Image (cartoon, rainbow, N blue to C red):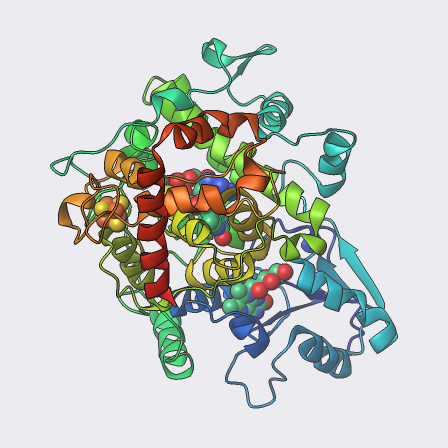
Length: 510
Ligand code: FAD
Ligand code: DLZ
Ligand code: SF4
């Protein structure tokens, strides 16, 4: 048997032929390893659609590598010898091939890197972890940017990324004379708005086999496995980008924050799961979208807004995660301790906005940003759910969820659990915001216009209760001053009504 030089482990979110672990690899002397393992499917109870997506994408990727002449070991979940963990499968592959070294691109999650760090001693073998060059800003570069700064504001980081990539730059100036067109991206949507439907891929034989496996093994996980229409190859995911550019990009900016009953996707791109798994390259996508503006086919507010999400927010979240882990996951600025309400797993609530967001999460493994931030996230923060429980829910239920991007979005942006590292004030809102940005309230058991009492929208008293409960932590925040002044100006009776309404509602959650 020929000697194996490098055993190259490719993780489920590294499905790119350009992945750094393959650069410089040799088809004759190296062997690639991909593994479906029980531990990765259950460290949180992932949505069945997410597991099926990754397994099918991994199997298609392995087939593509084999067709390109690579020797690939692929271990399926139902392989009777499967040990159930990355560590166990690397150990078995070392025993099979006796390689000189193990090579992998650095894992995107701290948990996995921590395990990998032990392999060299555990298996007495050289383990080479190479940087992941799919990010525009490396972990080291982000550390340099953050060093010595009191506040790590995304907006300033984003400008650096614009300069670095040259995206939407005219010389050293931002195209259109402004860095950020967000103020133009806050339209609410009318129910009769024409909304494009997502491009749906048809499951092939590989996907069908995966669906059977996932159906039999993950019955107890939250979420509907079928209908399954996610793309599972780069070619299909490219088609999703084409579809987005043609059908939705023009209005992406205008309706970015809008929510409509029965329209889970609106003008969003639905590509985070493909970028995060390696099927799409973030910079390629941004360049294609920029061309739409340069060629006069899409407005600047849409194109800038979209590019900011990817080279701004996405890169920034990656930087924050690696800057702050492993301690970050323990952040709990408000000392919130409530258990996650059961209805997050059932959708059984009279609150129409939460019901809609949770129902579509169950059906699609998807909710758009404002639903995650201002509906499920806002509610969890207002009622004081333990941020770790909130984090575990988000990590489990969305097809695009990986800890490196989910954790800073949840703990930092949505729950303010890091005390303001990411945002200057909590994203706390009463029913008024949800009513302005959606048509949920019309269908709701509660009345968004009522401030207190049993019929009042629960967000209204909960908003004030949250601010009062956390007054010692928030009153000194200059961006909260106006809000506390409003509270101070209320009569004692009004204040008491708010607090007793909130207490009654919170009791129902216990
Ligand atoms: P679009 O709205 O079309 O946006 C385009 C792209 O921009 C996305 O595909 C994504 O790659 C990127 N993007 C947009 N917003 C963000 C952001 N805040 N952080 C990072 N990238 C962003 N995104 C994830 O990819 N994985 C997660 O696990 C995740 N968890 C989240 C949890 C919470 C509580 C919140 C508030 C947001 C979370 N996000 C997460 C960010 C955002 O909600 C999703 O990226 C977006 O909804 C994915 O849908 P889309 O592809 O249609 O995005
Ligand atoms: C999310 C996930 C799941 C559900 N299953 C697997 C798997 O069986 N094999 C695999 O290689 N990756 C899986 N993943 C993605 C990994 O959790 C992800 O690649 C790492 O956490 C990144 O550090
Ligand atoms: Fe949500 Fe309140 Fe509107 Fe009901 S009334 S949909 S609970 S914001």
